[in-house]
Image 1 (cartoon, one colour):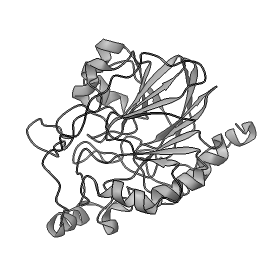
Image 2: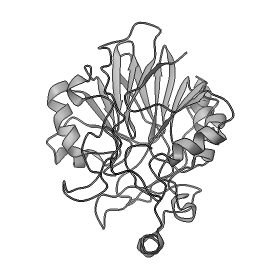
Image 3: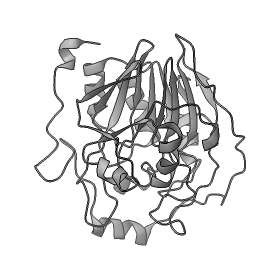
Amino acid sequence: MDRAAAKREFPKHFDGERFYNPDAPPPFGFAQVLRWKLTSRPEPSPRFVADVEPTVPPRRVERGQLRITLVNHSTVLIQLPGANILTDPIWSERTSPLSWIGPRRHRAPGVRIEDLPPLDAVLISHDHYDHLDLPTLRQLAPRHNPAFVVPARVSRTLRSANITSARELDWSDSLPLSNVVVHCVPAVHFSARRLFDRNLSLWCGYVIESQEGLVYFAGDTAFGSHFAGIRAKYGAPRVALLPIGSYLPRWFMSRVHMDPAGAVAAHELLGARTSIAIHHGTFQLADDGIDTAKKELLACRRDPSFLVLRNGESVNIP
């Protein structure tokens, strides 16, 4: 890592009450949401696709190894020597505050929650229901007692589920954990769990630094200059986990979600040796069908180093 560059701070992103995206337009408000919903023409998707064969990851990996398993959506198991890290875990049937309404899953998780190896850390990128799923966290906390790492002002949501050990990070903050250091980095997105709490908490990505190289988990993000900033500050990642789905219609979604072409551009800006697509294939949260993003990415990627994994599929990163 360039230590001199690491001392540089990211731009200001808090006005004293709410967080915001520096140098990026704000997400649309209620009027535009209503316009989208009234004019929406979602692509059809199968109600449920029974093509997932759950796998069982190893309990640990050996020195020099970096193993990535896509569980579903943005839930990824990152295995480094001495550190098993899970991102934005969701095993619930719906991404919703209620169990009986809201977007329903179209594919099963690729790893059963009881088959997870011991978890050392759980990284939460922001408070949206498809990324911060309290029913899942309530299961993980007593089974694994991991370190929960969350953006600024998100720990209070975890406290509502009696999870009191969450560590909050702001952009540029770092947290040493078992054999790794977790760095909190910018994303272009927003936060909200209720009608009137928009942007009262932060959103982020994470760079995981270890002897095996850098892992970048982008969380949810639109395309932006932050990718170049992350590379300048931390270096090129060995592997980047980049969102590709929930991107249509572009007039509405471009402020908060990348499309597949944007993810390819981010992969190149980051200089990632390997990238893996996330945030697709399980929940239909926008007008694109559950497999549209995968097809678009395979059509527009310029080399095979940008991978699309099935739920439950693992890869050992070279």
